[in-house]
Length: 295
Image (cartoon, rainbow, N blue to C red; front, side, top):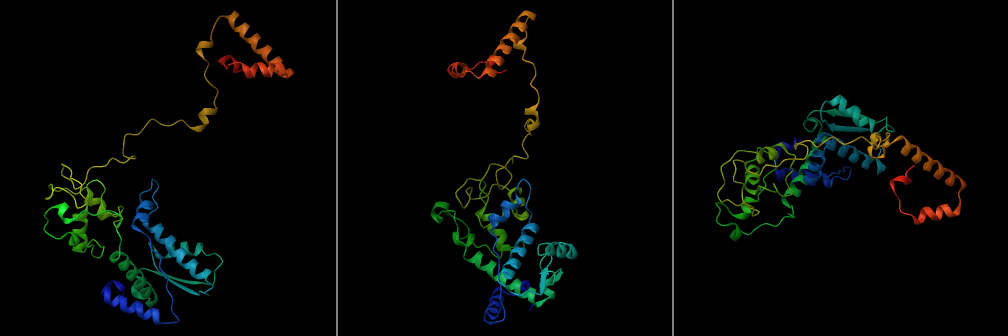
């Protein structure tokens, strides 16, 4: 099985159909949307792409095991250093010590079974791109005014890789200066993030394909100040500080005679409470609370 990256989309489709016709073969994919990936990577504590990829791999393997299939060998295209990644995967399956793991770089070009899995993944990915249903409303060509290319041409995504001229053109022509892109673009993608801050002259026409006016600045999008980049607020009190003894209230300070009188009142109140008389509870319930009640 050749490396899927060297094949045309049509050839990948043919090979996947061959896999479907083989009764002894089975395959599964896990689709991760651009929004889900970006949401993880852009958390305050990032859930990076490698961790997301690892979790998807674990879930795929677990699904096969849960189906009752006796798995003896697993071949994986590594994420990071192969030995460390193999050990990490094994830790997720402590009850399956009999499984032999083969984790390697460019495993799709080395092991035919990984190449077949890569074909299934890429055909699925291509189908998602080609049949993507936009949640965002697109303006008509008349509303957008005269453009060099048709409205439909501007929405051709290409392969989704940064080296594809169609993909680069798509990113530039569909970029909205306020909202960025539609949900098909992963905002955590380095190519997308750098393009938002890319220096550029005000484009002609001056309205984005989604109808937003471009900023009167030298970048493609309006500058955004993220919460973690803003001026740091005053440090919050720790929860332990709320259990410390309160500082003396200056308003309670007085002469020695007044302090002695206040002490006598408090002692009398404590004596009344200790007797638990019903009249006391009625008195407390009907009277308004004051600072003097806090003893």
